[in-house]
Length: 306
Image (cartoon, rainbow, N blue to C red; front, side, top):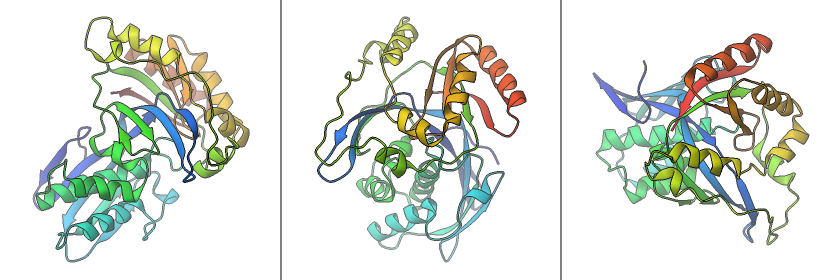
């Protein structure tokens, strides 16, 4: 079963959709709020690669997991697919539930929002089955109750994400980006990475403000050059503490930076997945082949980010 990015397919009594990987092209830490959460500013895009989720109506909520990365996640109540479904059921009396089947392809605890994307896909499928509009406030509330990255994954469209994930900007019409995603096979715990910043509640972080994306999102011919300039002025403030936990992130970044036609390499989210952006699809495919041959145990994918 394959579905296009963000689209729901139907067949018989089932619904299915792709849960695309989330990539943070930038991730600026503004400080730590009094409630303990870190305030962020991040440009988020979505990849062509991802997990796949199928929903079939049934008398009770259930989840089956298969696929090459199925061994890295739980099937029980702590799975975000089930958490999202339960959160929506608590807000929508009489919500019709059923059985989910998750084909897990994305690495776990990898900074590309695999669990959040799965949860968002579950909410979209339940909404479609129950006739709930995509912009229904209960859908958004269930997403927020499930996890900080779940709301931005609901639409899986390029946009700015601020705060602790609750403040989403408008969808951005960015030009497509040819990319290679590399995960060196280590799981990095998000909370540990944030602790590495050493911020106490109320502390600010500083750093240069986020680059302006207006020119890159206006659809003009210069949009790609404007986006490249904006991204070059951005950063991921979680890179350094993540590298201290998993030094292999440096190796992955070095391989991407050494690839021909790679014009930016950076870590996504809290790691350990890194991405490289390329001039075209041919350059991305060549880099993927080279890195995969050199590091056969790593997860390496060429894709397009939008």
